[in-house]
Structures are given as structure tokens and as C-alpha cells.
Image 1 (cartoon, one colour):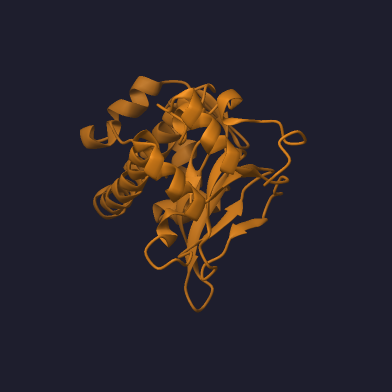
Image 2: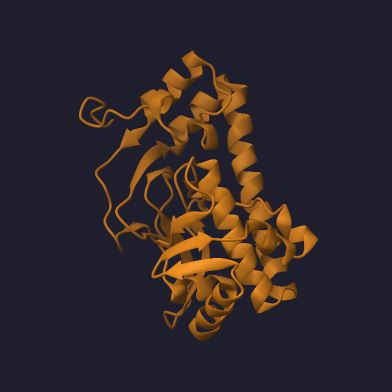
Length: 245
């Protein structure tokens, strides 16, 4: 177990506990969860958190920074499957076969809370609220996969990028950050990979959105000038999109 004196963030004092497993837990349940969590040293940009094929022992709750998850074929071609921010949990795709199915890599300096799964299962058997929260996270991952498939197969390039910007706005707002101005921790190439678009298309659309006064782009800083306008340009089904990635 990590030294909680040297790594003094606890579930009770974490700014993102309302998005993570502790939500809805009572004080005694929080303390039991806190006891099994291991908090390790920061990961730096490009550090891998997990690799495909790695045996599954632990779930990871993002504490700070951000990550990308991706799969890779035998030729090394990558497909990004999600971006993760504080409060998100990484590793559920390993539950079935007890082996991680994807890679997760830090996009910037980041920290995680490690949740040893065997111990987490034992604790969740005692606390139904914790087990219910774990099931909600698993359900959200399935929902994300379904809606990402719909986004990539049925939506235009413009709709995909507008969705991405709007969804980032929502996710930052949930975490207490500005919904209208935020830095992108991912590159345009990574955004394009995730959305099934070329980096040239991403750059062209960002330029067009800026000319239309929907957003302002300054390097990696995005300022949404007309959030209502962004949402109005999205299909109705996309406005309520609430998946993880």
C-alpha cells in the first residue's frame, strides 16, 4: 500500500470524487475504499500506464492530467479509442480475459489511483453502492463504444469535430473547469485518428469554425465563442452524448 502521508490525497478530499467510484458512498465505505487505493508517482508525457497483453490486476482512476487509450495492429498502426480525464477509470476492457486489450499512455504529466481489482471485488461485496457504481462505469464504457461507432459511421466530418469540441466542453465543465475555454492535451493528429479524419481535415475545419465565429483557436487553446451555435450545428442525438471517451 502506498504511504498516504507522502501522497496525502484521499477520496474524501479529491476534487473529482463526484465523478469516480466514491460518489454515493457513505463515510465508512469511503474509508474502506481509501484503504485499498495505491497512489504512485506521476507519469510523464508519453509514459505508458498499461500495455495490450499485460496481465490484468488493477483498475486505474485518473487523478490528474490526461491519457489516451489505443489499440495497435501487427504493423504498429494505432487506433485511438478514448481520451481520459480526472475521475475516469481505465482498465475495464481487461475484465473478460484478465488481460489488457489496449494501451493507455499519458498525454501530459498525470497521476492515477490504483485499485487492485481482487481487493476491490471483496470490498464491493460488502458495499452494494460501490458494486453499483462499478457496474455503472462498465455500462458507460459499453455505451461509449456504441455511440462512437454511430459517430464514425453516420456523421459527417464537421459533425464529428463539433461533437468532439462540445463533448470536451461538457467534460471540463463536469470537472469544475471552464466549459468555454480549455487547452487540448491531445494533438490534432490524435484528434483526427480518434474521429477517423485526416489532420488536414481537422485543421481545415478548425479554421472554418474560427472564421464563422464559433470558436477561437490559439495553438492548443480552444475558446468556444458560440456554444449554442456549436450545439445547433450538431444532430439532435449528439447533443445529449454523455459517454466517457
